[in-house]
Length: 202
Image (cartoon, rainbow, N blue to C red; front, side, top):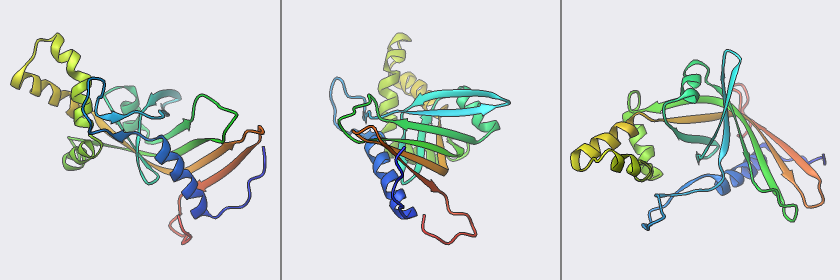
């Protein structure tokens, strides 16, 4: 592993943000037969655990600065977070291409669940921001057709499924960034959240 030159905390944060902006999902307002309402990019692997039972799930994500947001349906990952909010996530550009510089992020942080039950206004705002209400309606359309639902019945079913989801908000405590170079060398940088007693820049 190559020794990375000493960067300030602000410089490391800027590099991490560049990776997140390049890999996170984006809203897609264009219409078309094969458009769901979202620009799909690099997924992350989210690791949760409870009582020594780890669980890893590949998910698409959105970012606001260093904070990550993931829309997730009911399941093991949500149950784990309710009981243990400490999580880890990994973002790694694939496939590996030795002709160019590629990055990975290993993220450690605390997760919070934002749902219609506890934060209805915030939940709806995030849905709208990333066009996820449209995405969910498109993804649920085969189920709607299979159940022969239309009109109000279809809307009630889709809204029920959307409202059963939660945003997983991940606030990072620590991020390890690695850069892989064409000469097979690698540089590593580490960012840590500012402690309350630390007045340095995030």
